[in-house]
Length: 81
Image: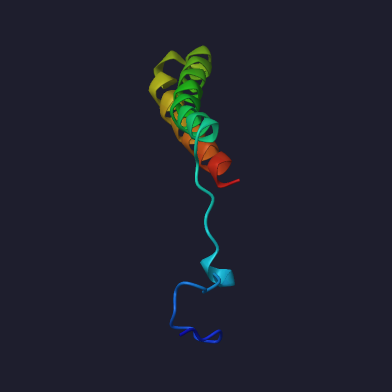
């Protein structure tokens, strides 16, 4: 016994617009995303530290923390796209 207009049956139910499936990261996308989340902030921290040291050696820690924050923000923004 089946009813074509029954909204209580989950078998034939179509997803609503607000229930759209979010894309999952698999395979190569997962590797690139995880490497980017790890390598980008560390690279930016190293670059920020090196640039701050050229300007003032006492600002090395500030440059590293700023670079790390910028790297995390860039990695987060890259994953949202």
